[in-house]
Amino acid sequence: MSIPVTSSGSRLLTGVLGLDDILLGGLSKRHMYLVEGQPGTGKTTLGVQFLLAGKRVGERCLYITLSETKVELQEAADSRDWSLDGIEFVEFVPDEAILADEQRYTVFHPGDLELASTIKRVLVEIARVAPDRLVIDSLSELRLLAPEPFLYRRQLLALKQFFAGQSTTVLLLNDVVPERDDHQVLSIVHGVISLSKLPRSYGVTRRRIEILKMRGADYRAGHHDYKLDAGGLSVYPRLVAAEHGEDFADELLSSNLPALDALFG
Image 1 (cartoon, one colour):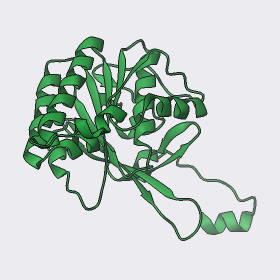
Image 2 (tube, one colour; image 1 turned 180 degrees about the vertical axis):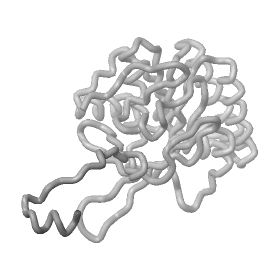
Image 3 (cartoon, helix red, strand yellow; image 1 turned 30 degrees about the vertical axis):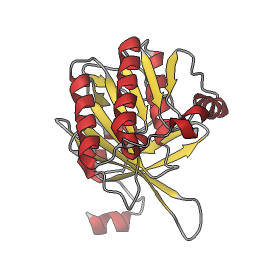
């Protein structure tokens, strides 16, 4: 089954088989979305598939990574025979010089300087590329740089205001950690896609995707299964019996047994 690659109207296709079905056509353009889940649920893979779908229709695509290196992303793409040519990659991974003793802050909290500096560098790259599709991986790194939740939320609001004047559709990837409350992010973004893994007593791990929020757009609510393999993410929308009804002709069929036909009229 082929994956549609053309977008229509104000919707963007995600490039993930089955996901556009539960989104009833894809993501609304020029908004910011959150993709959250535990490590290993396929957030990065979903982000790359989103950009590959954009590349296929000639859109400008940018992937900004704050955790994995470009080499790691390229190795993951090579394992799936995906060509990343035409997609801009920018990595903000600290190098050895930043970890040196003389580079450590002693007067100011690191977050006071590093968070603002990182956000500024991100905006510079976005202005340089002017992407139609953007993936930022991940919010967890920005959260660690923030000395307090208020500063973290303020920076996210600043990002939202910046994108309000752009023609960019943004995916923010975020790791879900049980002991950390990141619910404040949910109120800022336009939509939330949640990925989860459910261990079983036997057999393979069950993976589920759920749309937690989508402003101004309907979607197929509830949990839907998905798989993560060499081909990337494939989503299997939950079946609803009412959506698969068929009309049948009202007619009588003979059993070829006269006595039985007479019994049933």
